[in-house]
Amino acid sequence: MVTSMEKLINHLKTQGFIFQGSEIYGGLANSWDYGPLGAELKQKVKDLWWNYFIRKNHYNLGLDSSIIMNTEVWKNSGHLGNFNDPLIDCKKCKSRFRADKIIEEKFPDFNSGKLTNAQLEDFINKNKIICPKCGSLDYTSIRNFELMFKTNQGVIQDDSSAVYLRPETAQGIFINFKNVQRSLRKKLPFGIGQIGKSFRNEITPGNFIFRTREFEQMELEFFFDPDDKFDWFNYWIEEVENFLTKVLGFKSESYSKRVHEKEELAHYSKATTDFEYNFIFGRGELWGVAHRGDFDLKSHSEGSKHDLTYLDPLTNKKITPNVIEPSVGLERLILAILTESYCEEDIENGTRTVLKLPKKIAPFQLCVLPLQKQQNDQAFNLYTELLKDFDVIYDETGNIGKRYRRQDAIGTPLCVTIDFETENDNCVTIRERDSMNQKRVNLSDLKENLKKEFF
Ligand code: ATP
Image 1: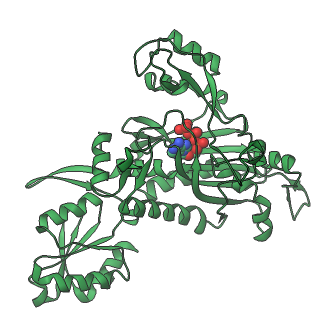
Image 2: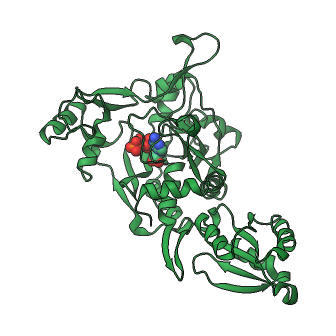
């Protein structure tokens, strides 16, 4: 596990995973660009989520809704006017902070989510929580800061054309509930999930890719009859935990579950449990599972004057389904995966940095290497052959030890080396990333052998 954020950021930059956004222009605060390896990693994590929660789950279906929606969506979801964070300014140095976050930085186990703005102010003054920038204790009072990004659609740039970038993907699902249910003839219970960009004008983004203003969410809204006695809330908590431990291989000590207290629940929520990961900077929300009751469908029914109820075919009863929402940020999950898999190990002649990524999400599954120049052509041909079935990279530069280190550093699970003996025995060496064990495999059995490793 990595213990320094700086080390992790440097490693990911030099290896082509994540670069500072707009770097050649001095950057844009807290924006990040994903290089070739980061883009692969992101894509594979999305595929894994989609497979687990949508494609292979017989209850669920996928969706891809718009980022910009009718402003009525945000009025009726309760975001417009209510989606804000408590902003506090230091009068001395003019720095701006999220009041709840400066408290939690000082008191990591204190839950400030349940306090009103007046109570937050009181707590800050009583506990003498000084400005994290200049150290003075002289703040303005707290104001609510609107988190949605506002822009205009069309040629007229006034309030009549104002639109918002979505701050969550969930609302696109609620407004399409009836379309999906009808067109796919779905019976309750069923879920609709989607992956997509969301935008929040966060007061204090930071901690690398943990909190950014542009990020991707993977959200599932699971609809069920409120009279259904099955415990769907805990069912989805278990599914999230399975995904983290069984699919991604997270260690149980790396995360914990936090049950929200009544006072801190969002107004629409009946219960919420967060999976919190032990990030380098401390514990932070990774994946929230919320019981949203019937709030969203009811609000959109009333607001749009479209009936979003479900007609039970057995009882002929009209139902407004209840909803369980497991929601995770892709980049936060990537940060947790990278934290979990980064290792520095002492080896015979020095140290090596390894990303022990699960095989399913490593940017490359294999690297093909010729031991010496004479084998370059044969190795390159093998590389193009293996590309038909695997994600492969080819590397012919530098000594073999260095090349293995390079693959360790980007998390490639297996290296396939063509050496002097290949010509005589038709065998190649397969080297395993984590154990560094090597075995020889006949070229005629190679693909079958590798398929067993990956599929
Ligand atoms: P926080 O308390 O950290 O601001 P939140 O409770 O507002 O998070 P939700 O609205 O529940 O977050 O969003 C669901 C998920 O989306 C979060 O669990 C997180 O993984 C991700 N997420 C939310 N905001 C951000 C952000 N600014 N940057 C990256 N990921 C985010």
